[in-house]
Length: 213
Image (cartoon, rainbow, N blue to C red; front, side, top):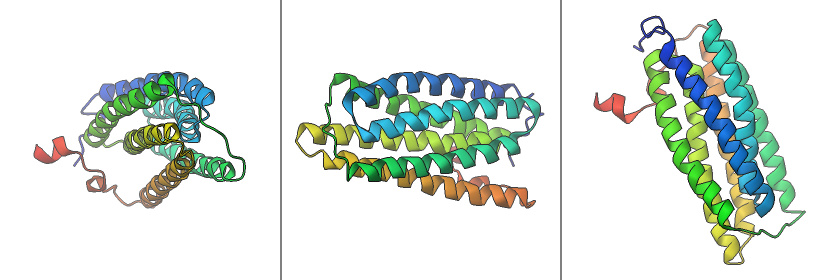
C-alpha cells in the first residue's frame, strides 16, 4: 500500500508539485516560440499541451496543499480530455490547410531537450505519486510520459520535413492528439472508480524502481 501523505509529512508531494509547475512553464516558454517559428503542428500541439499543463499543475499544487487531491485530479483529467480534442482538431485541419515546415536548430533543440526533461519529470512524479498515494501526481506522470513520446515523434516529423515529406508532421500531430485522448480516457475511468469508493489500483501505473524494491 502507498505510504500516506501524513507519513511523508506532505513535503515530498508538495515539492514534486512545485517542481512540476516550474518545469511546465519553462518547457512551454521554450516549445511555443519554437513551434510558431517552425510551423510544426506536432510541436505546436505539444507546446499547447505543456502550457495547459502549467495551469493545471498549479491546481494540483493547491489541491495537495489543501487536501483536495481528488478534486484537483478530476480537473486535471477534464483538461487532458479537452486538450486531446483541441489538438485533434488542429491536426485534422492541417490536412485541408497545408503549411510548409521551416525546421531549424531551435525546433530540434526544443524537441530533444523536452524529451529529456519530461523523462526525468515522469520518473520523479511516478515515484512520488506511488509512494504518497496521490493520484493527481500519477496523472501528471502519465502526461509527462506522453510528452516524451510526443517529443520523439516531433523530432521525427522535423527530420521528415528536411526530407521533403511534411505530411509526416501532420500524422504526428494526429498521433499526439490520439495519445492524449487515450491516456485521458483511461485516467477518467480510474477517477470515476475512485469517486465511486473503489481503491485506486496503483499496479496499473508501474515504476521499475518500486518493482525491483
